Amino acid sequence: MTLEPVAYRDGPVDLSGMLYRPVGKPRAAVAVFPTILNPTPAVEAKARALAEAGYVALIADFYGQSPADFPAAVALSTDLRADPARYRKRLAAALDALSRAAPGLRQAAIGFCMGGQAVVELAREGADLVAVASFHGLLDTGAPAEPGTVKARILVCHGDADPLVPREQVVAFWEEMDRAGANWHFHAYSGVVHGFTNPNRPPAGGPVAYDASADRQSWAAMLSLFDEVFG
Amino acid sequence: MTLEPVAYRDGPVDLSGMLYRPVGKPRAAVAVFPTILNPTPAVEAKARALAEAGYVALIADFYGQSPADFPAAVALSTDLRADPARYRKRLAAALDALSRAAPGLRQAAIGFCMGGQAVVELAREGADLVAVASFHGLLDTGAPAEPGTVKARILVCHGDADPLVPREQVVAFWEEMDRAGANWHFHAYSGVVHGFTNPNRPPAGGPVAYDASADRQSWAAMLSLFDEVFG
Image (tube, rainbow over all chains, first blue to last red; front, side, top):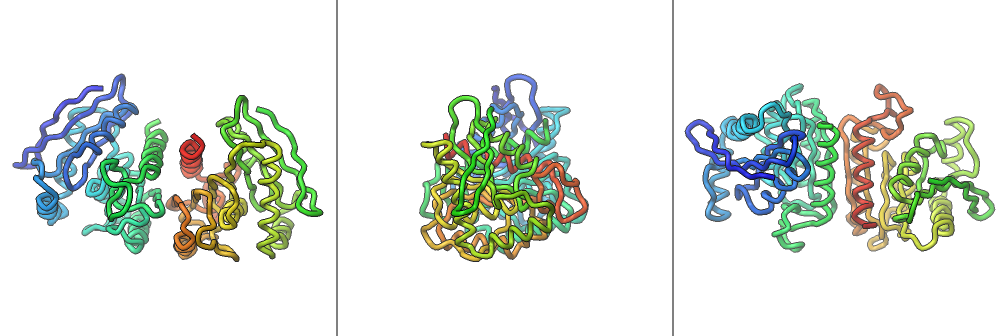
C-alpha cells in the first residue's frame, strides 16, 4: 500500500486529502468522509483497511484546516453546513479529486458521524456513486431526496441507542428514502451509541462509545455490499 | 459433507430431521427451522451452505408430516402454535436432537418465515443458544421475553416491505427486546417482501418474492456473526 497527500480545491478553499492505494489493480475507489474533527487515527485506520481490501481510498478534508478542539470543530462544521448547497459542493469536490487521482474507477463513499451524514447528502443529491455506507451518521437533512434522484445503494449502520439519532429520525429517514425510490439497507445495533467504530473511545458509559461487535459487523456488511456491487 | 436422517420425538409425536455434517472438525452446531411448509429445497440449500461453512446443521421438523399444500400447512401450524408452551417444547426438541447428534458443540439456530419466528421464540424462552438468526420471520409473540431471560445474540434480517411484518411490529419488537435486555442486530432491506431468501419464488410482484441482494447480504451477515461468536 502507498500513501500520498492529494491537494484539491473547493472554489477558493484549499483542501488536503490523503490517498491510500492498494497493492495491485484496485477494485474501485472509495471516498472516506471523516468525523466532525476531520481525519482522526480511527478514520485513517479505516482507509488503510479499505486499501488492504483492494480499494483506492481518499480521506476527504471538510475544512481545509485541522480544528484545534471539539468546539472549534463544531464552529467550522456549523458554518460549512449552514448552506446545504455549499456543503454538498464541498463534499463533491472530494469525489472530483478522487476521480482525478484514480481515473476510470467506479466510486463509493463511506463516512463516520458527520461523514456518515455527508455520504447520505451526496446520495440525496444524486452523486454518481455506486454505493454509500454511513456509520453512526445523522439521518436528517435540510434538503430531502427528490423522487428518482438517488443513484447510490445506501447502507446505514446505526447504533439504536445513539442519542443523536432517535427512532423517530430513523423512521422518517426510511420514509424519505422510500419516497425518493432509493435502495437502502438499514442496520440497527441494540444498546449501541454514537461513534461505535472508534476504538479510541471508551467502551461504554456515555453518548459516544466504542462497540467492538458493531464495529466488526458493520465493516463486514460494507465489504459484503462492495463485493456485490463491485464484483 | 454427509447427510443423515435424524429421528426424534416430542412427547408422542415422531419427528424426522435431516443432519448435514461438514468435512473436518465442525465449528458449532446450527438448528435450521424451515418455513410453514416444513423443509423445502430452499431450506435444504441453506443447511448445505452451513455445512460448507463448517457447521453441523440439523433441519428441524415442525409437524412430523409433510403438509400436502399451503392450506394444510396453515392448519398444522395454527394447531401447533395455538399453545405457545407446546410450540416452544416442539422447537426445543430439535435442539435436544441436535445435541445428541453433535454432542459438545455450542449451538445456534436460524429460521425462515415461520422458522424465523421460531428461533426468536427460542431466544425469548432463554434457550441455551449462542446466537439466533431470523430471516423474514414474524416478530410478534403471545409470550414476550422477560427481562434477563434471553441468552442468545439475535440477528433479524427483515424485508422492510414485508406485508406480514409492518413497521409497528418492528418497533414493538425492538421495545420488547430492550425491556428484556437482549443483544439484537436488526437489518431492514428496502422494498423487500416476505420470503426473500427463496430463489424459487418469483423475483417481484407479490407479497412473497425472492431478492438476490437481500438473500446474499443477510446470509453474509449471519456468517459474520457466527465468525464472531464461534471464532
